[in-house]
Amino acid sequence: MARSPIESVLANTPPLDGPKITIAVYSFTDKTGQRKPNDKFSVLSSAVTQGAEVWVIEALKKVGSGSWFQVVERIGLDNLVKERQLIRSTREVYEGKEAPKLKPMLFAGLIVEGGVVGYDSNIESGGKGARYLGIGANTQYRVDQVTVAIRVVSVQTGEVLLTVAVEKRIASHRTSADVFRFLDLGTNALELEVGSAINEPVNYAVRAAIESSVVEIVKQGEKQGLWKFKKTVSEKNEEKSVNENND
Image 1: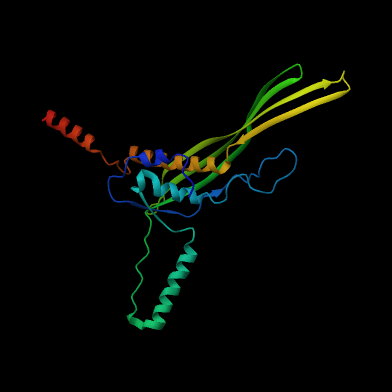
Image 2 (image 1 turned 120 degrees about the vertical axis):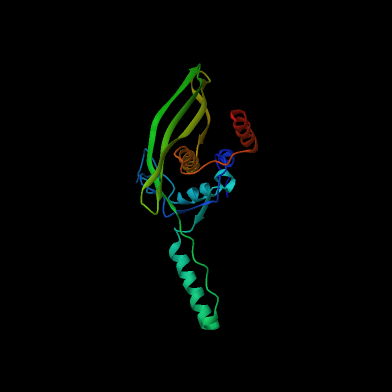
């Protein structure tokens, strides 16, 4: 799988103090309804990815070096249930009542919901250029913005425990240079032009926003006392030293 945009941030998030939290992701959809921006004609392709739940699951499994969440399958739940039914019925046919039973499926204590809630194109644009004696250069840029929202819901009570919204900008940059000169007393013209453009992938920005949201969810949960960060050896020694001094 492609490298995470904020891999070091995910890995360096403090680990959970306790067993992993079982969590489920049912869907994480594109709620913008936006199509790819185009100034000349209509484009039917969506502006953002339709499979953002892949990045949500990946971020949940990687945050804190994999110490935080045990993610259970829910997006492909129908396929999972059908496969378990097939195994159960096949075993009963060939092995009878003595066939070993499947282990019960894990249930989640928390559900992650949300989606890509905003995609604003061309929120900022500009450029600069200069020309002298027919030789010139110019630079242009454009900025789009994607917004991701995530919430964590308690399965037992239905209460929304945490909610986070993260914005990520998508930058496009174009540079060009040209030469325009008249030759042979103005009867012929020489024109040259070169240029390049760099566009940050929208999928990269969506993934970065999702992963930042997951890290922020972990931090907010710790502040609200829903869970605790595991203390390092130095932190434990410092706390012990403070307690001894107080005594």
